Image 1 (cartoon, helix red, strand yellow):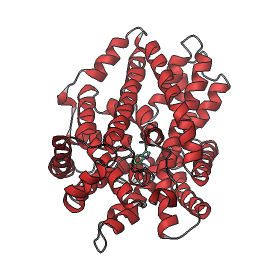
Image 2 (tube, rainbow, N blue to C red):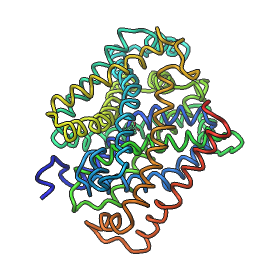
Image 3 (tube, rainbow, N blue to C red):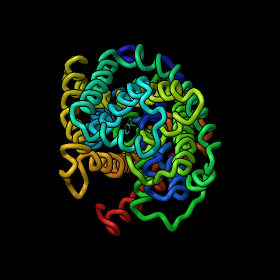
Image 4 (cartoon, rainbow, N blue to C red):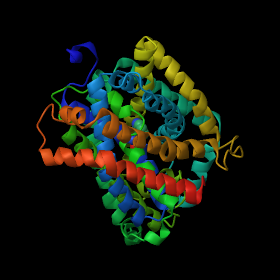
Length: 452
Ligand code: TRP
């Protein structure tokens, strides 16, 4: 039986914990607020949720189906399911995307470790926003310090991936994710009771479509893909570890719901505080690292809150980075016949090299620009807006037009039979709606507004 040959998740809850662990990460708490802030708030949020439902869930299901049916890594999956065709290119793109994503993600993940350290040292106490901003800029523009934390984070990631998925990450995410949720809710309560908070809530929830450009629409789509961990084969890889008696539809819906709730709560946690503290919502990647210390030091028990929060944020980042590294490692193990140890070392090592350039682009390399973007900004932009958007497009086209309805429906019906109208609707979305929507957004962004 296939389940016996490969490492795998213990059951449905394990899959959900691991996939939600992958989905919930810096994308929700760090990236979502800052791209929402840069793109005008409410209208962006509405589109984001629309894309999660219409594109996110179908792509997630497609990835699970491709992975479980093939019992293979993201690259091998297409070769097994469609031998002799060129669809393996999707898998190859996924490997490249893993490099792009992890290189800048590990920079920010490293920052979270520094902030754990700062929280422990009581560094936020009594500081105003200007001072917290200066602290953040000072730290990120350095060299050795951010690099140290980044490398430490890569070592943690490699350590977990090396140990295998079930005994490490599955076990801990089951406990830590709910704790994170409770923490976020508590911080939300503090945030919405700050004076001036309604301005922030209005920014987040009142749609003003005049603020949205085609680029903004593309960013919403890219953010939806990024946040759900779709479009590059992470969920193909995880799908290959899912047992046949795990229902894929309800799993995908539950993972997407959890992820979306945490993103929206992050917005509720951050925007009121931004407005109350007089910060600019479009301030970019530093948003969370300045705003949150700003509210921690103004709340009772803030010292402890800060510690627990940044520890959990690091954990959330870790459960995401391992899913990205696992794509590369599973590929190297199965396609290049490496041992897990060697594959982990080579994968993590190679990614770290580009990672260095991302970290230094806040300091020594800040004037080094490609397409008018620093290396960090370029990787951030490329990952979501190009690789994941394009990857998601190819995955739905593959599932809808090549893998075909009968294979897809057979696979999603393995554990529990889904009503026929529902599976037909999902197939219709995968075949027509999702590719057209992604195509329209991408064409609009590139042809009307260019790579800006
Ligand atoms: N979804 C994660 C986050 O929101 C990031 C992530 C993990 C990811 N694995 C991925 C993004 C695979 C795209 C593809 O932080």
